[in-house]
Image 1: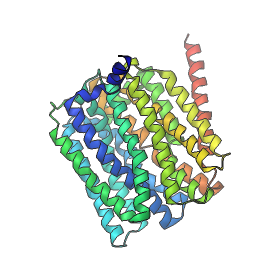
Image 2: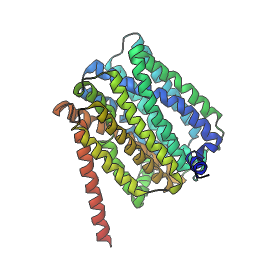
Image 3: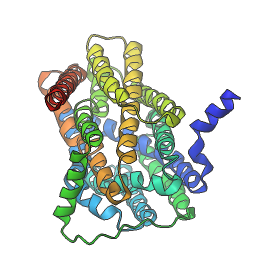
Image 4: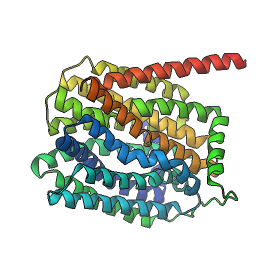
Amino acid sequence: MKLRIKLGDTFSSLKHRNFRYFWTGQCISLMGTWVQRTAQAWLVYSITKSPLLLGLLGVFQFGPVFLLSLFVGVFVDRFSKKKLLILTQIIFMVQSLILTYLIWIHAVKYWHIALLASIFGLAQTLDMPVRQSFFVELVGKEDLMNAISLNSTITNLAKIIGPSVAGILMVKLGVTACFFINGISFIPVIYGLMQIKVKANIQKRNHENVLKEIKDGIDYIIENDDLKFTVMLMIIVCIFSANSEVIIPVLVSEVLKMGAKEYSFLLSAFGFGALCGAIFMASRSRHGLNKNILIADSILISLAQIFIYFLKQYYIIAVFIIFIGLFYMTFLNMSNSTLQMNTTNEYRGRVMSVYTLIVSGSAPIGNSFAGTVMEKSGPDIGYLMCGLVTIVLVVSLLLFRKINSSNIE
């Protein structure tokens, strides 16, 4: 009986028809996305042999998110989220198929990948806040935390299966197949979105000044202690601890002296850890929010990254990367849930655009930091520096918060 209740809690959001369509389409599409992301990082490093240029790819891909997220957040709630998501999926599909063609005719250059990554980033700038804001329309607030966690479950299942499939495809068929599979994987998610029947929750506001609406959204976060603390902790962790996609290919190629198979396996290890974290969060969604999880995860991620510097054994490194994935995913899920559960519908689009800005928009800063450190100080130093900077900043934030609270009392 207890097991039945537990399983019911874990998958409670799937009782909603609309969410089932959305979730199923994502199951297929996200696998393709991670096949491409794995192949793309390996392709770039194979072409350039430069950790810095690999890190700069994150600038092109996530730069638009960094620059435009706050502006997009103002408009997210003014249009049908379903239609906006269909538009972004079409852009993703076209971008991937163009890259497939360039690789197939042996014409691909670094600037091609960078340009198409920028187009991807523009679409993602719109896609992420719309997607995060859409969950509440699909399942309501009661199952919102569970829906966030289950969506993370398939995202991280894709991180496991996608790199593994990419590794096989790159060895057997070449990188072209990876990009083509991603392109056609968007068809199921577009179909699923078209089947969703939901009344559009469009917020009509009188403000016409975009900058004023952005300021109102930021002020809303600053005035709420839970939102403000979560955002500050996210800025630290997402900039300095979320650079595994840049660090791992360099670690495998230059430090461990291994190839595509081992590289894809380590990405899958990260995804496996993140999947475990997402399942854990889905199973405990009925227990509500817990700020201590955010603090513990940020410190544990840092420690795991620091320890990797002292390891040279491939499989032991893989175990630590599993833990990094687990801690990072529980951190993100709790952050997402904290922001959404403490936000009214009027500000949801703007608050989730800040979430998008931090999670993806910080990548140009974090990727450039990791790439530059490895370029200047050696390929083995990436995780060590990221872990050290993160733990110093997290401890400083906690001390500042404690001192500030004491002064107020």
